[in-house]
Length: 275
Image (cartoon, rainbow, N blue to C red; front, side, top):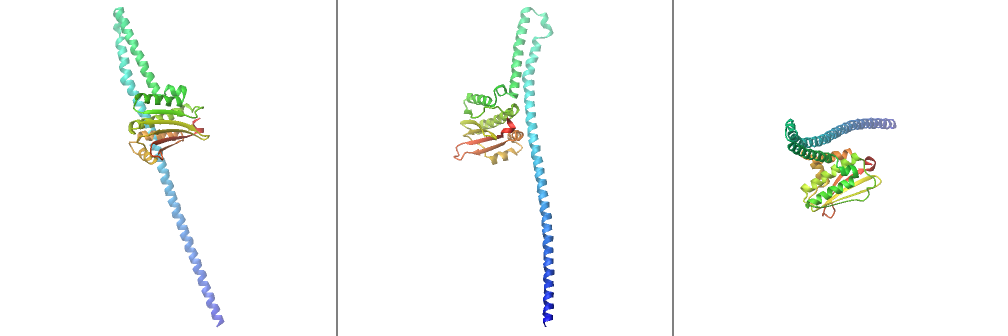
C-alpha cells in the first residue's frame, strides 16, 4: 500500500514538473514573441521618426531656398524696374550726337545725366542697405532695432519702444543679421495682423542664453497656433523664422500673458553659438 502511494506521488510530481516545464516554455516563447514584436514596433517608430525628421529638414531647406529666391527676385525687380530705366535715360543724354550739339546743350545734357547717375547710385545704395542695414553693420543689433522702432513710430500707427538691458558685447555679424531678419519678420507680422496699439522689445541674457522678447497688446499667436500655421503651405514667413532659428540653434516661444492683456514672443539663443 505504501509502495503504491509512493509511486502515485512520484507520478504526480513528474506531471507537475512536466507541466511546469511546459508552462515555462510557453512563457519563454511568449516573451520572445513579445520582444520581437516590441523591437519591430520600436524599429517602425524609429524609421517613421527619421522620415519625419528628414521631411522636416526638407521643408526647412525649402523655406530657406524660397526666402533666398524671393530676395533675389526682389533685387532683380528693383534693378530691372528702377535702375534699368535710369541708366537707359543716361544713355539717351550721352548719345553720339552730343558732340555735334552746341556747348549749352552739351552742358545741360551732361548735368541731367549726372543727376540721373546720382539717383542710380542712391538706388543701388538703398538696395545694398536692404541686404545688410548699415546701422546693423556699423553699430550692432541694438542700434538697428532702435532704428526700426523709430521708423515704426514715425508712421503714427503704433507706439513702439525698445530697450536692451545687457548688450555690452555684440553678436557675430552673421548671427546679428539673422536675428535682425527674424525680429523684422515678427514685427512686420504684428503690424499687419495684430491691430496692436503698442509694441515693446526687450533684451537680456544669462550666462547660457541670449533673450529677445516682443510684447504687444493685439491679436497674437500661442505656441500651438504658431506650430500649426508654420507647417501649412501658406506659412512661408513662419517657416523662414523657424529655419533661421534652427540655423542659430535657438528656440522661439509664442505665448499669451497670464493676465490675458498682451502677447509675448521670446527668442532664446545659446550664448556660445552667437558670440
